[in-house]
Structures are given as C-alpha cells and as structure tokens.
Image (cartoon, rainbow, N blue to C red; front, top):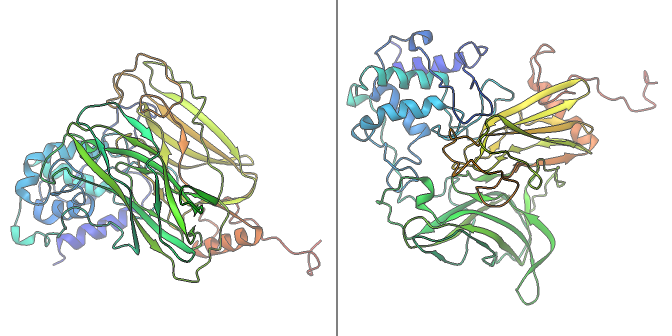
Length: 487
C-alpha cells in the first residue's frame, strides 16, 4: 500500500502542474486586511478528518517552521513536539491561511498565482499544505501514531549559520542599548577583512549575537535584537586604516528577519586584499531590556582564480525621496518607471517599504506588452529577499520599462502603523516611508544576452510554452551581416 507521505508528495507535485483552479488571491491589493486562503481537503482526493500531526503536520513544521520556532530561534514559541504545537493549532491555522500578507507564517509573501514561480530556498506552504493544516485543526488536531512522526531535527544553540560554516567570519564592535530609549542611527566603524589577495564572494550572511538568554520569550521578533538594520559597503583600507577608498562595493542590507544572500555563479562580488567592511549606517533600537550585541558576517568564497562573467550592476528602482502618503487611507499606490539602458538579468526582488507598506509589484513593459513579473506582500517585521532560480530569473532586453508599484495602507486596519492620522513623506524612520526595490540585477552584453536566452529556450518544450520573464526568447535570433540568406 502506498504510504500517506508518498501520496501527499505525489499530490503536491501533480497539483503544481495544474492551472490556478484551487488558488486564492487576496481581494484587496492595497489593504492590510487579507483574504484568507482556505481549502477543502476533499478537493485534493483526501478524506476529511484523516489528517494527523504524525503523518502530515510534523513534516510541514520541520520543513517550513522549526528553523525559527525552536529553543533559541527567532520565533516566540517552540514547535518541536506535538505537546508544544497542539495549544497553538488554531493560531497556526489562522496565520498560515493569511499566506501572502503581513502577519502570515511562514514569512514568505510571494503571491503564487501571479507572475514567476521559481525562487531559491522557497519554504512557503503549498495549497495542499494549507488544506492539511486546516483539516487537522478543524477535526481536533489529533496526534496520530507517534511511531509515524519524523525523526526530530537537531539544532545547535541557536547560533548556527543557515548556509553552512563560512570561509571567513568577521565581527563588528559591541554596541549597547538601554531597555528604553530612542532609536539611534550612525556609523559603527570599520571591520578589516585581513585578506591578502582578492577574493570573490559566493554568499554572505549577517547575524546578531547578543546577551539575551535563549530561553527568554519575546512577544515580537524585534524583541530579541537591537539591530533593526545595517547598511554597509567595502573598499580598500587607506594607509592609516581609518577609511576605505577605491572601488566601493555595496552589499545587501542586513535587516531583522531577512534571509542570507547567495550570489549567482556568474556574478560573484569582489572583496579585495587589504579591504574592510564599513558599517556606515546602523539603525539600533531598544527592546525592553539592557542589551549588548554585535554583528557577525559569515562569508563564503568562490574558488581561487574565479572571475565573474557578469560584473556590471543593473539599475535600482523605486523612489525613497519624494513619496506622498496620505493619512487614514487604504489602497494608496506609488509608482516608479526605469528604462533599461542595457540588457538585464534580474537576480533578486526585494520589496522595501515602511510600516504603511502592504505590497509591491514589479512589471516589465516591452512594446505593447505588459508583464507582471511578481507581486509580493510586505510586512515591515519580516523584510525578505526573493532570489530567482537561475532558469526563472527575468531576462529583459534594453529598452524595457521596469515599472514598480507600491501599495500602502494608513488606516487602523494596518497593525504595523503607530498612528495613521498624519501625512508622511520619505524618511529613514519606520513611521516615515520608503519605496525601493532592494533586489539586484546584472547588465549583459548582446552576446551574453543571446546565450542566456538560448539556454532558456532549450528548457522550454515547444513554442506553445511561454516565459513571461523572457519576452524575446522566441524572437528570431539575429543573423550576422555577410552570412548567406541575410539582407
């Protein structure tokens, strides 16, 4: 007899190939109040009331929840056993059904029935996962046979690197925040790398280490940390070791709840010899207890001798300066347009708004065609970066118009907003506003662009298969002058 685990896995794989018949979409794009995503387990060919913790729910929690919901993790409660999970069953049902809006768990807000589906390290829940959770809760959250539960995952003391042990670990100076106090912004200095040769970075992960005991609970994610975010760059140290200069490299911003950064095989970032990280813009906050902490930077390198194929960065979109956000109003939109001056491959999409933000979409306009590449919910408690799989990353020809749309809600329905009665423009504080895509892209030569499209075409079955992230994939390939048959 086929095991239930195998049956569920096969159902999930099959349903991924079906068009969005079972998918739900939030009904109000610019509101913080979500439409819940509820499903009937019988629509998936499973019997109502047959779901158990042992057979169905524990594997979901291991895959998508326990990395945070464990002793020493970022979550406020542990989900490592049935006894720990059972009291939270109704909350789990509610928070997972939010799916792609602020407050959803797990915090992965890509709208699944719009645009590109294909991201690295995607831990989001499928329609079938949601149906199993909902059926389990609605029928009393039974445990089932404990012998069927998966082998418990083993975590360390909460300070392990999510990408594995790095090649180089750098440490900032210690900083201390009082239990109660105003937010602080400023420069916390240089961190020399100690490198004696140029190296290209494959991945970088930033984590905060502080003196908050792991067994002390907090009501918010921010309660476990004092760094709200850190903007940093790198360059070569001057003779006195007091500043960095030369070719300055900007690195992805560290923020609470944000995932690590992995760079594409063809686009590693340079960290030169005699370099240092410059932590020039830290945002620190008080969290209710006197706390001392520092940041650690875990860096993994490409092999010695590696050279990136793509070294030119693409444009950044958005508007962080003259945004105009009205008080007490949902469904507000802000727009930005950028014309690509070079062929471009988008590597990652990272919506960045502030507390009023609820959603961001990225569109590509090519000729008469307007392609929605992705729409992503936004929660200022969980700023996430979404890195495209290599064969899904948008490949856009020069002349494409990138259109970014931000959606904001300043009503009482937005729980992240401290006070929605006042107008707010752009600014660094969370009660002010930003509208930026912090993701990144690379510029391609004509030869590189054609080679990338050739790879993408080879992955498609026939001309009836369309890739919305590659509007020219099925266009005729250019013919060099002088070749027979050309004009």
